[in-house]
Length: 249
Image (cartoon, rainbow, N blue to C red):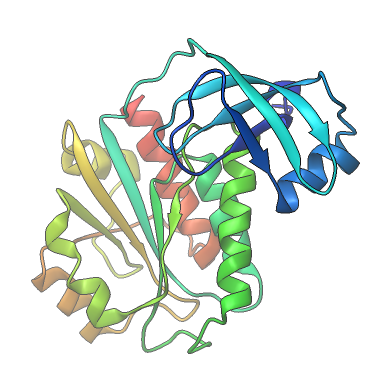
């Protein structure tokens, strides 16, 4: 079992470009976590990552409603750009299942997440509060899994808008229960490019319609089977991410 390290708990993201010696301000939920959850004080060390994915050691200077911290030297952490970047397009599931997809997808390395609506999605809208929660979950999961970037959680798309994005990818994997049966590992070995951008598309609880599948395949997607069992929609994307991550590592 993997446990959260102390470093991961003290990792925070800031907007903009940091500079050693400068003082930054941390507010909102991160400030609350520092002051009331971790109970850190002036002089304690934290890790800061700026918008360029540069990682700094930092020392807390003041603890109040907001936190100030001085950036120290950059951390010489091993960081390589993955040869495969995987985005996940997830049909918006009912309830809070999307929370699980965002959190675990972030841990498994998703570069971005695109919620979308199609014919069999139960909900037809996502409010600002729910979208903000997904983005907070992505940020929190990136901190605890020691990522150097927070995956982008996009505004929800219509199915047609999602299809229009396919051409931007080197491979589009369309998870469909009616795809020809093939071991997922074998399918991935034959479909994954050596490097580039991949989109994994996962449908709603009721599955894609034939018309939706035909439209996706006409745009260049490849239908893949996830095995003999029908996975829940919030499990399917994570299975794909795990297999791709294992094969690309």
